[in-house]
Amino acid sequence: MPDLDPRTPVLVGVGQASERIGEPGYRRLSPVELAAEAAREALADTGADAGAVAAAVDTVAGVRQFEISGPGLPSPLGRSTNYPRSVAVRVGAAPRRAILEVVGGQGPQHLVNELAATIAAGGADVALVFGSEAISTVQHFAAAEDRPDFSESVEGDLEDRGYGLKGLVSRYQVAHGLTDAPSQYALFDNARRARLGQSREEYAAGMGALFAPFTKVAAANPHAAAPVERTAEELVTPSERNRLIAEPYTRYLVAREKVNQGAAVLLMSAGRARRLGVPEDRWVFLHGHADLRERDLLDRADLSRGPASVMAVRHALELAGIGVADLTAIDLYSCFPIAVSHVCDGLGLPADGSRELTVTGGLPFFGGAGNNYSMHAIAEVVGRLRAAPGTYGLVGANGGMLSKYSAGVYSTAPAPWRPDRCAALQAEIDSWPAVPHTVRADGRATIETCTVKHGRGGRRTGIVIGRLEADGRRFLATADDDRTLDLLSTGEPFGQRVHARSADSGNRVAVTTAGPPRG
Image (cartoon, rainbow, N blue to C red):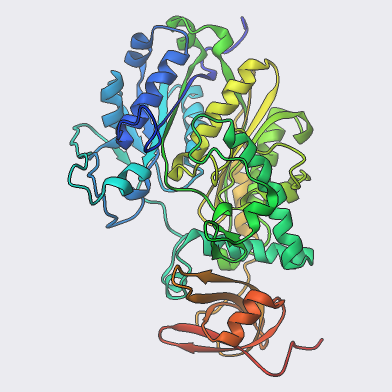
């Protein structure tokens, strides 16, 4: 690579760490310790002197754990006051800059994109990015007498970017029970079923066919939290172990948060990689990259699609100068089926299990490692590309309610740094007309999409996104009477007429006797 600009960013090291309760070698590691183990592996993965590489790190960036992803959340075993610097200290790094990223599964890929650009511009030379979760350990020992103490205080500057929740959560959504991810994403999957005109059984079969191959990948991954291969039918059939969460989702179809996992990625300039003696066969280039944000939930024209996500992937591929057919490794964020299928719909990828769409096993089976899942995807893609030089891999990382999407296209083939056009693309997205909506809904309306949440005690709660017949405005509502819940759960609710009534506590809808509107 004699003509390569020395400022070109390259990925030179990746690492992963994990443990499962009750298995040999389990050590009750904290999130900091899991990230540090992964970071040490990434430093060693460079093939250079790990101590010298650690000493050269000038920037560290940490992905938030769930317990620091919102105000007032508990930390039953304690936590670090400065997560990025806690990890840095453990691996022998003394960076001048430490970043704590905003909430969202887009974070790992976004940080790689951002810090690669910073390196290319001369603002950094060596950046270590990492994240971790120990939710399984924390929940297991929260009430134990011999519980470990994960508290620690570390000095040093911290660029805390805040939670980044604006536009993702509102009082309006909270008032209508739309606070949990399964319910939010179920609305999207049911909107997609309505668009495709499929029956409940047909759509469930499609979700099972999509995710069954994911379980096979997870079963072969030593870092997977649930390494069990399952059939498509097993995934979508409710049972004692696979209860309904939010229709159409059973437990096996939703991201698994009980994990003990950490992952890290090391980036540096090509010039510094040469000076540190990193062999060129360890270098992986970011050929394409994009970060885009979708319109807020109720503003979206079509709740079954995520056009910003598709635009992000398309732009990353465009920068790389390749098409979907040129990819040999793909990992699409998979917290729920719609997170995968809406990207497949937009790119023309099959969503029937005939093409591998994960390199880890996916969030329900490998594990939804908090905001950090896609760091594991990047690590796995890098390993595959090194084993097949010159091939291409894609990582698609999703945050919020299909709200924020970051994409990266990787290859060992040398490539110059290419700036993206995301600012112009984001301006285009922001210019799209918003669907009119109202906070208070009264009168006849039709159901656009819906879900029914199932509590452990058998309690059902309906959540509806509807349109007022009078003016077409969109609204949120709940349903709690048996007749309406039966329509949402067993009937074909889309387009059906309901009556909406507002109150200080929120909107409610109920089935009318007039049937669906005509015309």
